[in-house]
Amino acid sequence: MKTLLLMRHAKSDWSADFGRDHERPLNERGVRSARLMGRLLASEGHVPQLIVTSTAVRARSTASIANEAGKWGAEVVLEPGLYGSGADAAVQVAASAPEVDRLMLVGHQPTWSILVSILTGSSVDMRTATAAVIEFDIPGWTDVVGAKGEVVAEFQPRDYEGTEFDRG
Image (tube, rainbow, N blue to C red; front, side, top):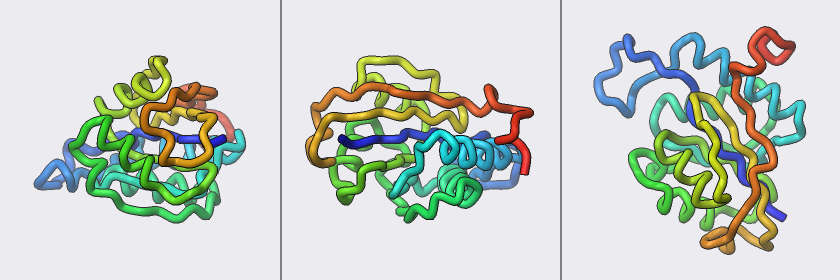
């Protein structure tokens, strides 16, 4: 059994002086949402062992902040192929991951919604900082190509604003 956590980057700051899109940072709400999601996923037992993230600043920051806030202790690996690419590329990134049981990919829309649909046949509204938890009955990540998983949980930070996960 393998678990894939797909997390969209948190809310970015369009008013920041960032130059290229790749360098756009998180805004204050995005930082807060990334922290909330880190704590929430830890509380729900969905702690990744490895995080593979897009190289975009907003995605890297989301991964790092959630990892720290949730005390996950996961290794974070930067993957250029998750920025500006499609769902097929993301599946290949998962397929080439080391053999951990719980893998998280952090990336972007519209790829993440399309990816959930391809992997499960389900639809998840992948708003900023949303995490979808997908389980696969496969022995290894190389088997994820063409496999059908099941969305077992989805978390949107707005549903937890003002809770204990939003404090601290």
